[in-house]
Image (cartoon, rainbow, N blue to C red; front, side, top):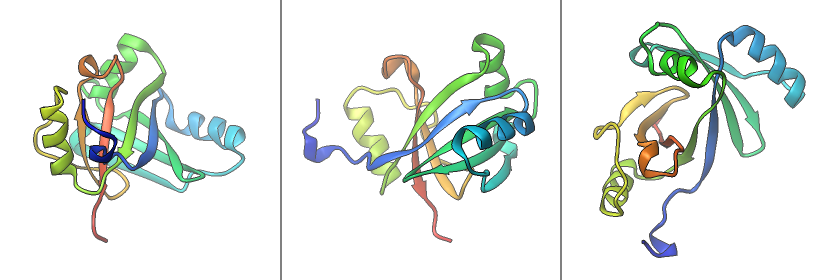
Length: 142
């Protein structure tokens, strides 16, 4: 495996949680975290509506399916509500894709896509990461 110096996953950017009802879940997490969400955003290409909560340096992202054939809808059908993915902030997403592929990880979308919260994103297949769907996020210029 790679050395410590070659790791460029800077921090946990957010934890994604699949939910059936975004409004009800927003109320639940407002009570849990003692603060309101700061953003609701729809990502049409993924068939998902998201809501973000800031928690220290990281975030919680709630994900509700907006179409029956979206990845979140399939996840909810198979596993029910719960942790969907862990996202890591990266400085250079393309460099990280290449590094992880060389390390033997399977990348789900070879070309980074525009995601929620002003990010460029790519996913690592859970079969290559101990059953955890990993998202890499690079901040887009504003």
